[in-house]
Image 1 (cartoon, each protein chain N blue to C red):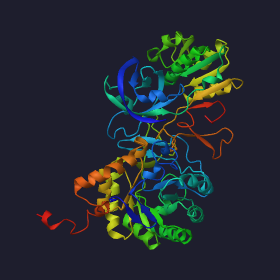
Image 2 (cartoon, rainbow over the protein chains, first blue to last red; image 1 turned 30 degrees about the vertical axis):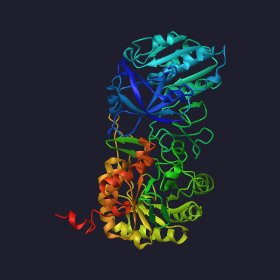
Image 3 (cartoon, rainbow over the protein chains, first blue to last red; image 1 turned 90 degrees about the vertical axis):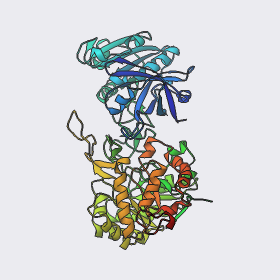
Image 4 (cartoon, rainbow over the protein chains, first blue to last red; image 1 turned 135 degrees about the horizontal axis):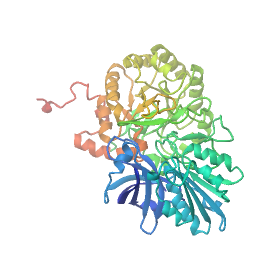
Length: 259
Length: 313
C-alpha cells in the first residue's frame, strides 16, 4: 500500500559535502517490501517547488517505524529539505516502486554491490539484508572526491569495501568498473545503483551474471500515471512497449530495459 | 440535496470535478488511493489511432508554481484503449470523457469513431491543442477554419457529444471558440498548456529532450481564468475549465469566470487525493459563500443583476 503521510523528522545530519542523511518516522515503514524502493517527498508547502522529489531509502528500522534517506543538496527542493529540523513534519508519499530482489542471491553466495555517488544509499539496506540471510557482500563505491564520501565505515562493517574517487583524492582513482576488473573480484550476483554510464558498463561487462540495476529518471507523479519516466524495453527497443521507472522499476534485471 | 450535480451535453455529473486528461492515465494508478466512483467524470489520457511511444526523456521539468511536460501523447492506440482500458473503467459509476488526438483529419475521425463506441464514454474531448507533437495537434488548434472543419468531421462520426479542447497559444481565443461552435461542438474544455521552456544552468541546453513543453499548474491559473471569462461571454457552449486548479476555492473561481465544470490536472501529481479532497470541501465552501447550488456560480464575474438588491450599495 502507498501512503501519503505527514512524517516527523527524527534527525538530520550533513554526513559529507552537501550530502544529507534524514531519518523520519511514519506508518509507511510497515509497507516497505524491498531495499531500493523510494519515497516521494514534498520538500516544502506552497508552490515552489511544486512537485515532489524522489529520494531513495537508505535504511529502515521497523521496530521504531523509522526510515532513513540520503540525498544530495542540489536544487531548490533539496535545499529546502536540508533545512528541516527535528520535530518538523514532512509530507511523504511512499513507499514507491520495486526494489532489489534479495531472493536472487542465495545463502553462501557472493553479491557485488556497486554504487556511484548518490546511488550508494539504497545499497546500504540491501547489504544489511543480504548479510542477514548469509550472503557474502562486497561493495565497490564511487564518489567524486574525498569530501563527498559517506557511509564507507558502515559498509566496511558489513563486508569488503573498495572506494574509488573520480579525482583520486581517496582510494583508487577512476571508475568503479576499473576497480572491479583490477581486483579480479569474484561474485555470483551484481546489484548496482548510480549514473547511467556506470550502469551501462556493468550491464555490458557482466552479461554472464545475474545483474540488477536501479535506474534514475526525472519523475512527475512517482506512481506511474504521468508517463514522464518511461524507457524502452530491450525486446522492442524502437517500438511501443515500455516500462515506467517509477512503478515498474526503479530496479530492473539487466537486459530488460534500454538504458 | 445534491448541491454539486451538473448536467452538460452527454454528461450527467454527480459533481463537477474530474481529473484532466494526461494527468490520470486511465485511472488504474489512482484507484489504489480511493474509489473512483466519487469523481464527477474522468478525462482519460489522449488516444491516437495507432500506438505512440512519445518523446525521449527528460519529459518533465519544473518551474515556479508549475511544471513543463513533453510526454508526446504516449498511448497504446485506440483499439487497445477500447478493449483493455475502457472495460476496466466500466466497473466504476463514472462517465468517461475520452481525449482523442491525431496527426491528420482522418486519424481524428477514425479514433473518434472507435472510442465513442464504448458504453462508458459519454463525451469526446477533441485534442486540437497538444503542444508536444511535431505534426497535427496544435496546428488544428491555431487555425480557426481548420479547427471548425475538424470539429464538423468528428461530429459526423461520434456517437457522443464532442467537447473541443482549446489551446491558449493563440492570438485570439474567442475566434477559435466561435469557429468550433460553428463546426458543431457541444462544449469547450480550456485551457491546454502554455508552451514554455527551461534551460540547464551547467550545459546551457534545454532540460526537456523535446526542448519545449507545456506549462501547467498554478502558474497558468490567471491565464485560464481570463480566457474562460472572455470565451464564456461570446459563445453559448458550456465550458469545462482547467489550468492550475488545486483547491475548492479555485473551483469556485473558475465557475465565476464562466466554467460549468472543472478538471484538475497537475495537482494530482502533488497530491493523489486532490480530487476527492476538493469534492469533500466544496459544500462547506458554498455554505460560507451563501451559495445554494454550485451552478449558480457560473459566469458570476460577468452576469448582470446577480447580486440581491439588498446587497447593493
